[in-house]
Length: 123
Image 1 (cartoon, rainbow, N blue to C red):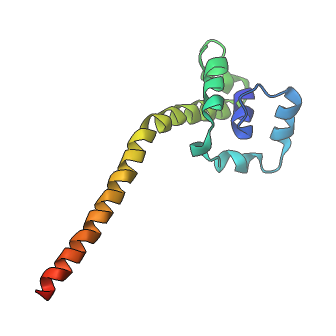
Image 2: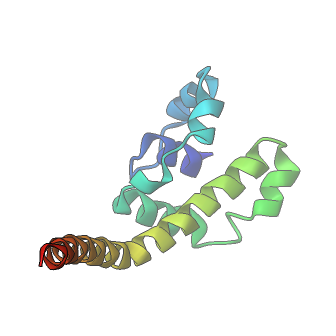
Image 3: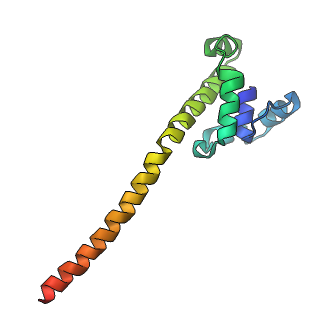
Protein backbone atom coordinates (compact mmCIF):
# COMPACT_ATOMS: atom_id res chain seq x y z
CA UNK A 1 0.00 0.00 0.00
CA UNK A 2 2.96 2.32 0.48
CA UNK A 3 3.50 3.02 -3.23
CA UNK A 4 -0.22 3.71 -3.69
CA UNK A 5 -0.23 6.26 -0.89
CA UNK A 6 3.07 7.77 -2.07
CA UNK A 7 1.40 8.30 -5.46
CA UNK A 8 -1.80 9.72 -3.98
CA UNK A 9 0.18 12.11 -1.79
CA UNK A 10 2.71 12.72 -4.60
CA UNK A 11 5.60 12.46 -2.15
CA UNK A 12 8.90 10.65 -2.79
CA UNK A 13 9.04 9.09 0.68
CA UNK A 14 7.67 5.97 2.30
CA UNK A 15 4.48 6.94 4.08
CA UNK A 16 4.17 6.02 7.72
CA UNK A 17 1.65 3.30 8.50
CA UNK A 18 -0.55 5.87 10.25
CA UNK A 19 -0.58 7.91 7.03
CA UNK A 20 -1.51 4.83 5.00
CA UNK A 21 -4.39 4.03 7.34
CA UNK A 22 -5.54 7.65 7.35
CA UNK A 23 -5.63 7.80 3.54
CA UNK A 24 -7.42 4.45 3.27
CA UNK A 25 -10.06 5.61 5.73
CA UNK A 26 -10.86 8.81 3.88
CA UNK A 27 -14.33 8.77 2.36
CA UNK A 28 -12.94 10.04 -0.95
CA UNK A 29 -10.06 7.54 -1.25
CA UNK A 30 -11.71 5.57 -4.04
CA UNK A 31 -12.62 8.79 -5.84
CA UNK A 32 -9.01 10.00 -5.50
CA UNK A 33 -7.79 6.79 -7.13
CA UNK A 34 -10.35 6.89 -9.93
CA UNK A 35 -9.74 10.58 -10.67
CA UNK A 36 -5.98 10.50 -10.11
CA UNK A 37 -4.16 13.02 -12.32
CA UNK A 38 -1.50 10.75 -13.75
CA UNK A 39 0.00 13.58 -15.81
CA UNK A 40 1.15 15.43 -12.68
CA UNK A 41 3.37 12.76 -11.10
CA UNK A 42 6.60 14.31 -9.92
CA UNK A 43 9.66 12.65 -11.48
CA UNK A 44 11.12 12.19 -7.97
CA UNK A 45 8.00 10.30 -6.87
CA UNK A 46 8.07 8.08 -9.95
CA UNK A 47 11.75 7.28 -9.49
CA UNK A 48 11.32 6.65 -5.76
CA UNK A 49 8.53 4.13 -6.36
CA UNK A 50 10.49 2.42 -9.12
CA UNK A 51 13.63 2.17 -6.99
CA UNK A 52 12.02 1.17 -3.69
CA UNK A 53 9.11 -1.00 -4.78
CA UNK A 54 8.93 -1.98 -8.42
CA UNK A 55 12.59 -2.83 -8.94
CA UNK A 56 12.37 -6.03 -6.87
CA UNK A 57 9.67 -8.30 -8.24
CA UNK A 58 10.14 -10.74 -5.40
CA UNK A 59 8.86 -8.05 -3.02
CA UNK A 60 6.37 -6.40 -5.36
CA UNK A 61 4.68 -9.41 -6.91
CA UNK A 62 1.22 -8.45 -8.14
CA UNK A 63 -0.08 -12.01 -7.86
CA UNK A 64 0.93 -12.15 -4.20
CA UNK A 65 -1.03 -8.96 -3.57
CA UNK A 66 -4.11 -10.45 -5.21
CA UNK A 67 -3.76 -13.54 -3.01
CA UNK A 68 -3.38 -11.43 0.11
CA UNK A 69 -6.30 -9.07 -0.41
CA UNK A 70 -9.07 -8.40 -2.87
CA UNK A 71 -8.28 -4.67 -2.54
CA UNK A 72 -4.47 -4.81 -2.42
CA UNK A 73 -4.15 -6.64 -5.75
CA UNK A 74 -5.96 -4.07 -7.87
CA UNK A 75 -4.26 -1.19 -6.04
CA UNK A 76 -0.83 -2.73 -6.65
CA UNK A 77 -1.69 -3.18 -10.32
CA UNK A 78 -2.91 0.40 -10.46
CA UNK A 79 0.32 1.74 -8.91
CA UNK A 80 2.49 -0.23 -11.32
CA UNK A 81 0.40 0.87 -14.31
CA UNK A 82 0.53 4.51 -13.24
CA UNK A 83 4.33 4.39 -13.02
CA UNK A 84 4.56 2.71 -16.43
CA UNK A 85 2.30 5.43 -17.85
CA UNK A 86 4.46 8.12 -16.22
CA UNK A 87 7.56 6.66 -17.89
CA UNK A 88 5.91 6.81 -21.30
CA UNK A 89 4.49 10.27 -20.63
CA UNK A 90 7.93 11.54 -19.64
CA UNK A 91 9.57 9.96 -22.71
CA UNK A 92 7.15 11.57 -25.15
CA UNK A 93 7.23 15.01 -23.49
CA UNK A 94 9.88 16.37 -25.93
CA UNK A 95 7.77 15.13 -28.86
CA UNK A 96 4.65 16.79 -27.45
CA UNK A 97 6.54 20.07 -27.07
CA UNK A 98 7.83 19.81 -30.63
CA UNK A 99 4.33 19.04 -31.88
CA UNK A 100 2.96 22.13 -30.12
CA UNK A 101 5.70 24.29 -31.65
CA UNK A 102 5.03 22.88 -35.12
CA UNK A 103 1.30 23.42 -34.69
CA UNK A 104 1.91 27.06 -33.75
CA UNK A 105 4.09 27.50 -36.85
CA UNK A 106 1.43 25.85 -39.01
CA UNK A 107 -1.25 28.13 -37.57
CA UNK A 108 0.94 31.17 -38.27
CA UNK A 109 1.58 30.04 -41.86
CA UNK A 110 -2.14 29.38 -42.36
CA UNK A 111 -2.90 32.92 -41.22
CA UNK A 112 -0.25 34.30 -43.60
CA UNK A 113 -1.73 32.23 -46.42
CA UNK A 114 -5.17 33.65 -45.66
CA UNK A 115 -3.78 37.19 -45.92
CA UNK A 116 -2.12 36.36 -49.25
CA UNK A 117 -5.31 34.73 -50.58
CA UNK A 118 -7.35 37.78 -49.60
CA UNK A 119 -4.84 40.02 -51.36
CA UNK A 120 -5.07 37.83 -54.49
CA UNK A 121 -8.86 38.08 -54.47
CA UNK A 122 -8.59 41.88 -54.39
CA UNK A 123 -6.31 41.86 -57.43
